[in-house]
Amino acid sequence: MRDKLDIEGTSRTPAIAFDFAGNHLKITGESYPEDVTEFYGLVFGALDAYLSKLGKGTCRFDFELIYLNSSSAKAVMMLMDKLDAAAKKGAAVDIYWYYDKEDDTMQELGGEFGEDLENAKFHLEKMPD
Amino acid sequence: MSSDDLFAAEEQVIAAAQQLLDDGRFADRVDGALYEELLKDYQKLFRATRRLMKLGDRNERQLNALGQEQRRANEIITKKNKELDSLSTKLSKYLSPQIYHSIFTGAQNVEITSSRKKLTIFFSDVVNFTETTDKLESEDLTNLLNRYLTEMTNIALEHGATIDKYIGDAIMVFFGDPESHGVKEDARACVRMAIAMLRRLRELQAEWLELGAEQPFHLRIGINTGYCTVGNFGSDDRMDYTIIGSAVNLTARLQANSEIDGILLGHETFSLAKDEVAAEEQTPIKIKGFAEPVRCYRVLGLYDDLAKEGTVIREEADGFKVLLDLRKHDRAEAVAALEAIVARLKG
Image (cartoon, rainbow over the protein chains, first blue to last red):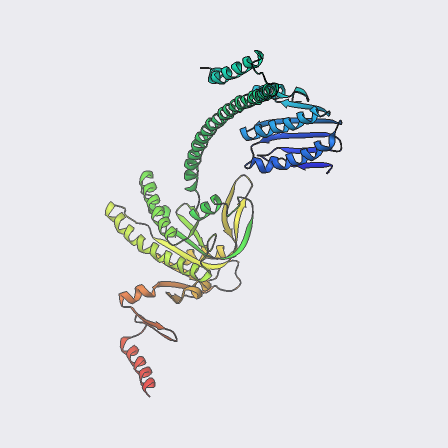
């Protein structure tokens, strides 16, 4: 398994900073890729490989998204499902959803994502200034 | 209708399904568990649908807002572009079209810089302008001068000249920068332009006489070809695109020494244009700053024009050239010379 997955952000795709060795995973920026399955396919693959070895370990996942389209929202829900499933198997998973303090929709959306989680711990936080 | 109302039917389905479970209507536990799992997935899918719809609506709002912002920005840009267009059109009147074009297309930087180029320079001046115009009212003088400069400028532009400046009634233009058709063609174009100007001047003189001007304008023209320093001179705040160098000074001297309504060429211009232009060498003139007297040539006209008038016979082909100036040679003398050539050919 690889130690890291780093993908630089672009105007259409978020930055991916998965530090598997440090158990800290992060997705930052705007998300409206031209091909959602191609972009998130790579992310899902790396996350699946990591979670399959996590066992009872700990993991923190930060979402810091400013804008996302509907397809990306579906991909985010799939990421959360994977994290929640890992938590169900015994891992200590913390999910942080950071929102812009002036963006009510992203705050509300994060809250709703959190409601779906049954096992992972969810944290709704304002983005630092 | 609120967004909740949009999902009333789904809410009812969920409530009814939940009621079934709560009422313990499933005798078979496995069936009940499967049904509960199915309901849970349906609820999750339902939440996801609402969420995605909400997100889609929000993105559409943002897109619309951005669209409006862009329309406003476009309106401002269009307005500013119009202002800029109007301003640049006004400014263009103060610049030669070639200079204006090369600046506005970015081909030339507006900075203090210069280069050496071989140019053909033209100077013209109205003979005794002050005396000629002394008796005119200011308005009449303005009209006369502007009409004259407009006509001459049009001819200069038609021939591809770069207008350097107007100094009162004097005109200074050059050929070879920023556009050049080669030194030879630049020189020829300049001489053709000068001849066209004099021709137009004769028409204007007739018009002015008709209108009551007692002493219409007469010109002296000087043309010379040589290396000049061309570029922007001045300060960063105020600069002129112009040319400097001894070739420029010499042109001004040639102009001063030209006969009235005549064109005086420097030696290099004559050499470059002599196939097309009939000119007569004059007594070399002594010019301050030049050690030797300067060779110069009085323009008689374009060979093509002279041939039409019948004053010149000109035939030219590859390896064959006949030029007969009937103003310089007696017809009988010319016939005799040509017959001698024919005899040699037959001989």
